[in-house]
Image (cartoon, rainbow, N blue to C red; front, top):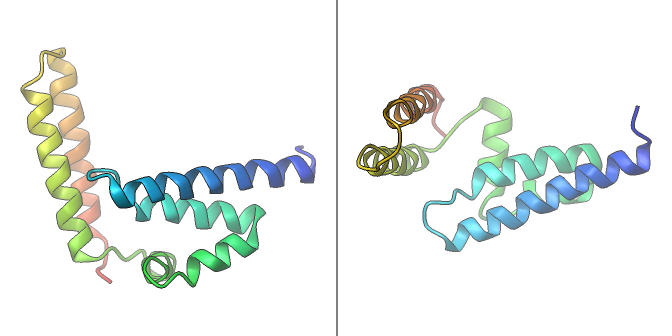
Amino acid sequence: MIPRPLSQLLWRTLAVACVALGMIGVVLPGLPTVPFLLVAAWAGGKGWPQLEAWLLAHPRYGASIRQWRERGAVPRRAKWAASGMMTLSAVVLLLSPLALWLRVAVPMAMACVAVWLWMRPEA
């Protein structure tokens, strides 16, 4: 069993890393923001309740985090953006010189994620 101070430090480290990745995602096209903030809120709930509360109350991203927690909801705009990025990634991957199995397996995995994503309720 991990001692409480170490456990809290690990949860906080994960939360801060995910907030940092989310902030990078705000300015870097193709890197999602909200999924990282979802993980940050989850990790914050385990080791940093103040950060979790701040994320849930955030004026721009708090509603998305709360909707995910309450209903597993994903906004339609986010579904379209994710689907578009996965399609673009699949096309680039298919045109790359990688092994055939990789050029087929990764787009298939992305297709499964897209189906799962579109089956989620909308915000």
